[in-house]
Length: 190
Image 1: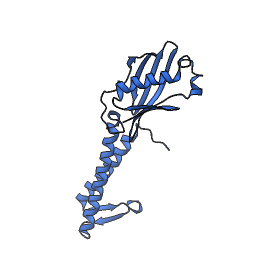
Image 2: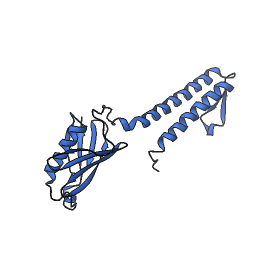
Image 3: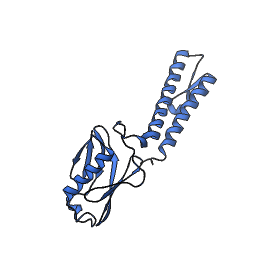
Image 4: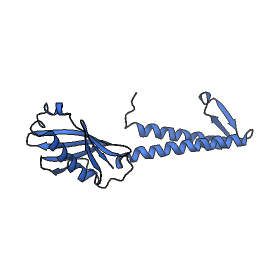
């Protein structure tokens, strides 16, 4: 089952609130729930102070980890997965540049978006997404066989078109990254 990305902050926030509530209530009452057997076992501060405070530290660590994950999810739209800062912000709608084969617009929707090629022969959208590790970002492109079947792209030589798109997008969004054009993608590596 895939969790929708819009629900993720709510789920992580609920987990953070749960652990915070258990910790605060337990410290106030002197009784903490042991995270085993469906939270049916308790640990009393008076009977086992060392175990009680170790369990309290465990709940505090869980609350901190969930809080960090919540922060990471909420700020993920503002930074690429590689951890490298974006040198130029991506416009959410219609940031464009005129290239030798046409005009390229870049849109962003969360951790990805579209590179829209506006050509005399028509328009075509290529999906892009932030990468991880050495991959700053990648753009999904049609294979050579698929290229011929797309009316907007068929009149343009695939290699020259993809090189022009890689140069334009790399210059604007991934300065300093190396563009590698593959069979079905353009990968920008740091």
